[in-house]
Image: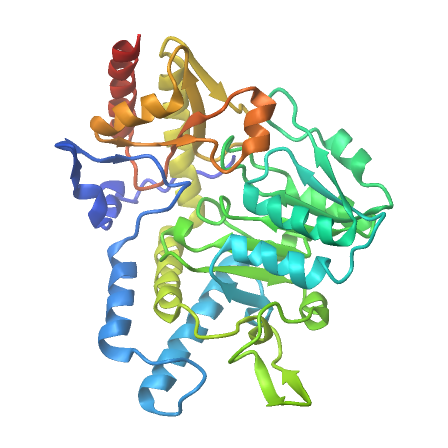
Length: 411
């Protein structure tokens, strides 16, 4: 990680933009270490959603009156902001409810019509369930099989073994950019290049990458890239799928209804051009306007500054956690996002998280929608502390102090 922190940014002032972080939980100041689950929302995002409903609320792409035009311009403006943010064309970006929907769109609209018995899909051991289950469902219906790329002791992909799996029967490779459990940052550009050499279509789950690092999807070389808005300080129910233009043109619609058509007759329907061909029904208009505001906010801070800030917090938290007796950290990749999964010897993950909550510390416990990864490590669950740029070094110290206190209670 080579990003350097801009010393002129007042991170305390940035934190003050997030109203929820000022609240107390169980009488204690909130320490929110669950940003991998969902990111908190700054005032400009909340204000943008509020302003839409107060002053501009109308449906998009349907009415010629002033409100309809304002809503449509704001909605399509958000698409274009998002496209610039990840360096792609706006007409290649399908707006949807998030990564789960986006991956299902690829599974049912691209893979289902094309895969057949004898074909294979390659996934990795560290995938979120959203990047496993859709492919299992498609494999069951097509007769395709699934191959799994394994990890090394650091929690990194074994690239030699991965490339060995990319045999002529493999038609699709789908992998995460950043692991939601281990924080491992996968070398997706290199992996997608190897897939492309072999004629294999590549899909990247960018849920945990988009909030934390500058994205240049065009340079990755993948065929599809999915990401979620609520993890990048935008509203829930927002996200996008980027796809190569030739795929969008060839794929049939996933869901039918309004907006995704040009003309409907009982004899047949003429579908709209991509990306609108895949955007049936009334979208989450206010949500995407809010996501556009989130993109503006993140861009103003600079993603390189956000990454550097989070790397400093990660290094601090990792060092302090390592000093706690009995702590086991899962995942020590050489390149990591600010996610630390851990257990304390003799304590159940849910007990740790429950008692930490009483100290005002919000972390996640459980399998993190990654059962196969839990099985790999031989555990049922872990605790996960996931940090964001709005967290502080004082919170890191308070979290570790609370963990020491909780550990004594459970001893």
